[in-house]
Image 1: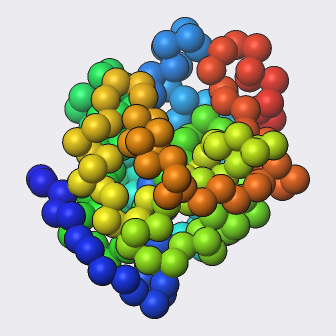
Image 2 (image 1 turned 180 degrees about the vertical axis):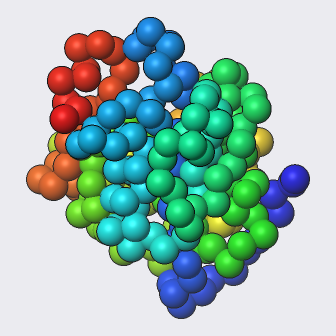
Length: 207
């Protein structure tokens, strides 16, 4: 499915959809898919979805890849749109493309992108980024000590450009770098911690 680029301002009331990237296979975690890592007694993907909803994203699309059948069986994701990414092993870029394509036919004016392996980012940071949305031309990112991080909000006007440039594990980094002057940074270091669950040592952050 191609993403059609749109233009034009709105009054800022268009829907901001949550887009959760949860396809990773956890290569550095011995091949344990990150979506299914236990956190507070439930799969990590459930926690991320709950944070998006508490942060004001009523529509949530979840991109699955590694162990997608297992995620469907074990995680309670009622009301979410589940998007399969058969090319998940190619990296985050393929998941971002799949997620944006799944939103193309909806009423969403922006996608708020969150990574499943950052449980230190909760509803407060999501709310701050979401509330900075103004129009389909918006680009907003959480910042930690002034450094750009997640979540990142992409107005619909940017989806086609991001999809065409997203590659490997770089995700939208190339697009964000090219359009750095257009990205509004919202400081979230006082309400969130932007660590990743990448290695065995990082599992200490999970309860």
